[in-house]
Image (cartoon, rainbow, N blue to C red; front, top):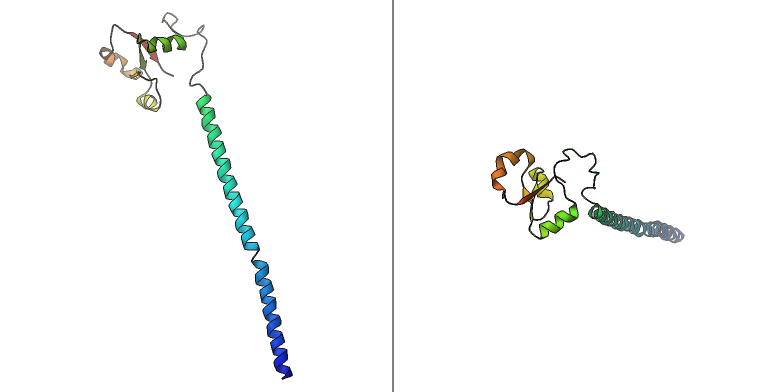
Length: 139
Protein backbone atom coordinates (compact mmCIF):
# COMPACT_ATOMS: atom_id res chain seq x y z
CA UNK A 1 0.00 0.00 0.00
CA UNK A 2 2.86 2.35 0.80
CA UNK A 3 4.31 1.64 -2.63
CA UNK A 4 1.04 2.56 -4.29
CA UNK A 5 0.89 5.87 -2.37
CA UNK A 6 4.46 6.71 -3.36
CA UNK A 7 3.74 5.90 -7.01
CA UNK A 8 0.61 8.07 -6.91
CA UNK A 9 2.59 10.94 -5.39
CA UNK A 10 5.27 10.62 -8.07
CA UNK A 11 2.63 10.65 -10.83
CA UNK A 12 0.90 13.71 -9.43
CA UNK A 13 4.26 15.47 -8.92
CA UNK A 14 5.31 14.57 -12.45
CA UNK A 15 1.95 15.74 -13.79
CA UNK A 16 2.29 19.04 -11.92
CA UNK A 17 5.76 19.56 -13.36
CA UNK A 18 4.48 19.03 -16.88
CA UNK A 19 1.61 21.43 -16.39
CA UNK A 20 4.02 24.07 -15.07
CA UNK A 21 6.21 23.70 -18.14
CA UNK A 22 3.31 23.85 -20.61
CA UNK A 23 1.58 26.70 -18.78
CA UNK A 24 4.87 28.66 -18.74
CA UNK A 25 5.26 28.19 -22.50
CA UNK A 26 1.67 29.23 -23.27
CA UNK A 27 2.01 32.96 -22.40
CA UNK A 28 5.06 33.22 -24.68
CA UNK A 29 3.06 32.31 -27.79
CA UNK A 30 0.49 35.14 -27.51
CA UNK A 31 3.27 37.61 -26.72
CA UNK A 32 5.23 36.60 -29.83
CA UNK A 33 2.09 36.72 -31.98
CA UNK A 34 1.22 40.14 -30.55
CA UNK A 35 4.71 41.52 -31.25
CA UNK A 36 4.61 40.21 -34.84
CA UNK A 37 1.19 41.80 -35.41
CA UNK A 38 2.36 45.15 -34.02
CA UNK A 39 5.44 45.08 -36.28
CA UNK A 40 3.32 44.25 -39.35
CA UNK A 41 0.81 47.02 -38.61
CA UNK A 42 3.59 49.58 -38.02
CA UNK A 43 5.27 48.53 -41.26
CA UNK A 44 2.04 49.01 -43.19
CA UNK A 45 1.42 52.41 -41.63
CA UNK A 46 4.94 53.60 -42.39
CA UNK A 47 4.78 52.39 -45.99
CA UNK A 48 1.44 54.15 -46.52
CA UNK A 49 2.82 57.34 -45.03
CA UNK A 50 5.92 57.28 -47.23
CA UNK A 51 3.77 56.53 -50.29
CA UNK A 52 1.56 59.54 -49.53
CA UNK A 53 4.49 61.89 -48.99
CA UNK A 54 6.21 60.67 -52.17
CA UNK A 55 3.11 61.18 -54.30
CA UNK A 56 2.48 64.59 -52.70
CA UNK A 57 6.07 65.66 -53.39
CA UNK A 58 5.92 64.53 -57.01
CA UNK A 59 2.61 66.34 -57.51
CA UNK A 60 4.04 69.56 -56.08
CA UNK A 61 7.21 69.53 -58.20
CA UNK A 62 7.05 71.45 -61.46
CA UNK A 63 7.62 69.49 -64.64
CA UNK A 64 10.08 72.04 -65.99
CA UNK A 65 11.99 74.90 -64.51
CA UNK A 66 12.15 78.27 -66.25
CA UNK A 67 15.48 78.88 -67.91
CA UNK A 68 17.31 82.02 -68.80
CA UNK A 69 16.60 83.18 -72.34
CA UNK A 70 19.88 85.06 -72.60
CA UNK A 71 21.86 82.03 -73.77
CA UNK A 72 19.10 80.20 -75.57
CA UNK A 73 19.87 78.98 -79.08
CA UNK A 74 18.01 80.54 -82.00
CA UNK A 75 17.22 83.88 -80.36
CA UNK A 76 15.32 84.95 -83.47
CA UNK A 77 12.60 82.37 -82.76
CA UNK A 78 9.76 84.12 -80.90
CA UNK A 79 9.03 82.82 -77.42
CA UNK A 80 6.17 83.29 -75.00
CA UNK A 81 5.84 82.78 -71.26
CA UNK A 82 3.92 79.89 -69.78
CA UNK A 83 1.29 82.30 -68.46
CA UNK A 84 0.77 83.87 -71.88
CA UNK A 85 0.57 80.42 -73.50
CA UNK A 86 -2.05 79.29 -70.96
CA UNK A 87 -4.15 82.40 -71.52
CA UNK A 88 -3.96 82.21 -75.32
CA UNK A 89 -4.69 78.46 -75.30
CA UNK A 90 -7.79 79.10 -73.16
CA UNK A 91 -8.96 81.69 -75.72
CA UNK A 92 -8.27 79.28 -78.61
CA UNK A 93 -5.66 81.54 -80.18
CA UNK A 94 -2.85 78.96 -80.36
CA UNK A 95 -2.35 75.30 -81.16
CA UNK A 96 -0.01 73.41 -78.81
CA UNK A 97 2.21 70.84 -80.54
CA UNK A 98 4.01 68.31 -78.32
CA UNK A 99 7.25 67.37 -80.12
CA UNK A 100 8.32 64.71 -77.61
CA UNK A 101 8.14 60.98 -78.26
CA UNK A 102 4.75 59.29 -78.44
CA UNK A 103 5.39 57.49 -75.13
CA UNK A 104 6.17 60.79 -73.38
CA UNK A 105 3.00 62.29 -74.82
CA UNK A 106 0.98 59.28 -73.64
CA UNK A 107 2.42 59.61 -70.13
CA UNK A 108 1.50 63.29 -69.73
CA UNK A 109 0.71 66.19 -72.03
CA UNK A 110 -1.04 69.54 -72.15
CA UNK A 111 -4.77 69.10 -72.60
CA UNK A 112 -5.68 69.70 -76.24
CA UNK A 113 -2.09 69.41 -77.49
CA UNK A 114 -1.30 67.55 -80.71
CA UNK A 115 1.37 64.86 -80.61
CA UNK A 116 3.91 65.29 -83.39
CA UNK A 117 7.37 63.94 -82.51
CA UNK A 118 10.18 66.19 -83.70
CA UNK A 119 11.42 63.66 -86.26
CA UNK A 120 7.97 63.64 -87.94
CA UNK A 121 7.30 67.39 -88.14
CA UNK A 122 8.53 67.89 -91.73
CA UNK A 123 6.47 64.94 -93.02
CA UNK A 124 3.35 65.88 -91.06
CA UNK A 125 3.42 69.67 -91.39
CA UNK A 126 0.41 69.55 -93.72
CA UNK A 127 -1.72 68.27 -90.78
CA UNK A 128 -1.37 71.60 -88.94
CA UNK A 129 -3.60 74.60 -89.61
CA UNK A 130 -1.29 77.05 -91.39
CA UNK A 131 -3.40 80.01 -90.24
CA UNK A 132 -2.98 79.21 -86.54
CA UNK A 133 -0.19 80.29 -84.25
CA UNK A 134 1.71 77.08 -83.43
CA UNK A 135 3.47 76.62 -80.09
CA UNK A 136 5.87 73.71 -80.05
CA UNK A 137 6.97 72.37 -76.70
CA UNK A 138 9.13 69.55 -75.43
CA UNK A 139 8.80 69.59 -71.63
